[in-house]
Every structure is written in structure tokens, then in C-alpha cells.
Length: 168
Image (cartoon, rainbow, N blue to C red; front, side):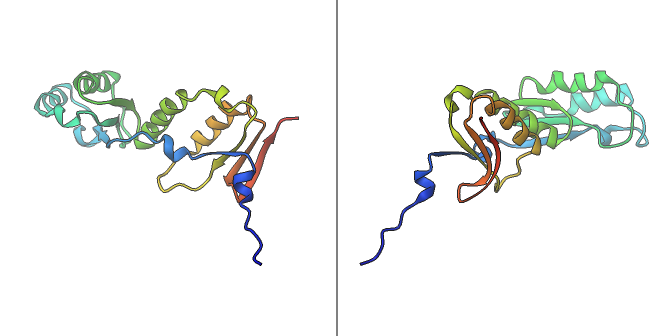
């Protein structure tokens, strides 16, 4: 007679958190002010205002948008504010920085919705492999969020974990 196969992972009482599940849906776009620089070094107010006026900002409806400058140039703060005035009625999310900065903000918003007490005394595995990129900062933040309530924290997959924390 064959021996019954026992799934020890299911019996372990582990709670798995896949940070990829927290990834906010939607298109992400980067507006690079470098394309508006005069001779690649300076921003001319009149030209920039013309650029702002000529854009169809409705194309950013419900998009997650980062604004920044990838060139080594000094951009006056008002330029980002002027972009903000035009994008605010349309963009779902608007941040200063690049797409990585945008992703961090979106994950921060998702983490803020987690109630740590839902994980009181849990043995938690933070899944380590994702199809979509999860910023390293998010792993640190979920650790800070859950350590005070968790019985233990692990990183990886339930069948192969790295122990991180165990309450004494």
C-alpha cells in the first residue's frame, strides 16, 4: 500500500505574503523635463509654458505619473509645480522622481492599507520571487510593519525559507 503524501507546508501554519499582490494596477509613465531644456542645460519659462499649453493632458487620465529630469541640469521648482497643475486633474498618482520612485510610492500606499494586527502571532513568509519587480525598500518596510506583531518572519518560499525573526 502506498504511503499517504502529507503536505507539510499546508500544515505548518505559515502565512505567505506575496508583495507582488500589493502592486497597484495601472499604467506608469515618466515625464522627463530634459526634453524641454534649451541646449540641454537650461529651462526657458516661456518655452516651457508653451509646451505645457500645447499638451493634451487628458491622455494621462488615471495613469500613475512620475515627473523628473534625467539630465544634469538645475530645474526650478516651479517647473514641477506647473506640471503638477496640469496633471492633477487627470493623473491617478503624481510623484517627483523616476519610475522607481513612483513604484515605491505606490507600494507605500498599498502597505498603508495593511492592518498589522491581522497578522498577530502569525508565522509569516514574505515571498521572495516575483514576476514583476518589487523595490527592495518594500521588503524592508513590510518587515518593519509586521515584526512587532509576528511570531516569526521568513523570506523565500514556504518550502525553502530564510529565517529573519523569531519572537522570544
